[in-house]
Amino acid sequence: MDADVRRAADLEVRPGAAVDGRRGAVPAEEAVAAGGETVGEVDGTGVAEVRPIVLRPGDRGPEVTRLQRRLHARHYYFGRINGRYDEQTKFAVWALQKTHGMAVKGAVGPREFAALDRPVRRRPLVPNGGANRVEVNLTRQMLTVYRNRHPVLYAHISSGAEINYCHNGHCGNAVTPVGDFRVTRRAPGWTTGPLGSMFNSLYFVGGIALHGSSKVPLRPASHGCVRLPLSTSKRLYEIVNIGDPVYVRGKIHRRR
Image 1 (cartoon, rainbow, N blue to C red):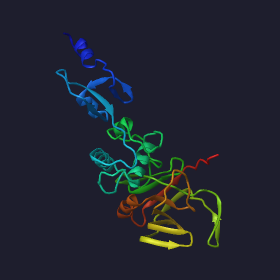
Image 2 (cartoon, helix red, strand yellow; image 1 turned 45 degrees about the horizontal axis):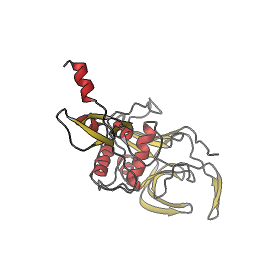
Image 3 (tube, rainbow, N blue to C red; image 1 turned 180 degrees about the horizontal axis):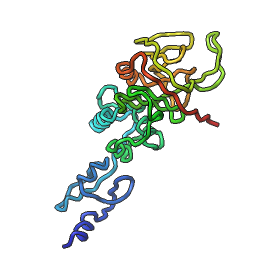
Image 4 (tube, rainbow, N blue to C red; image 1 turned 135 degrees about the horizontal axis):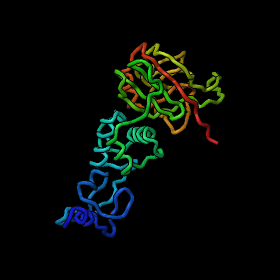
């Protein structure tokens, strides 16, 4: 049997099998690499029926642990490796999906697992910026931290909602300013001001800061600060110092 015929036999379609959303069968090792799991027995040809692994918020188990470890290795996740698809894991998945131009949702399937095997190929917002810097992309609602010109942290964010507000007697326009700034002050732990509570704040212009928050929705929702997931803000606070550049670019898309 020549090579082409053997390959066709190895990929013989079997009812009920699927990988990457397609029905069929593949060699077992390829199924696992594509984010699938084997179903049933592997026959003498090494072919097994497979189905894609899909993880969702609330799931638990070894596959979630595997996901968390891979997200951590790719600089998206900085929470506990606990096998629980919790909110901090969801925020990391959102960052992964945004970085690779996918639909942003909680479910993780073969496309997300495949993306974790690929390097990020996006150009920096500021190619000639400081070797150690923070970039905030308002359009994509993403934050990236560089150390020695290499990205070491990707985060989903929620920036200023760009609406007029009055809260506890303080009124203003909820805008995250665009421009070139530097970290001017650090405030560890929780602090509470007239506009709410902030965690591990890194101020970069006036009272506007990069900070952790328990509320980081899929829309610009802050009074002007850049909100990050709590677990990610802990890592951010460890590696960003006073004087580090903060480059803010883009503009938000308003929902109609």
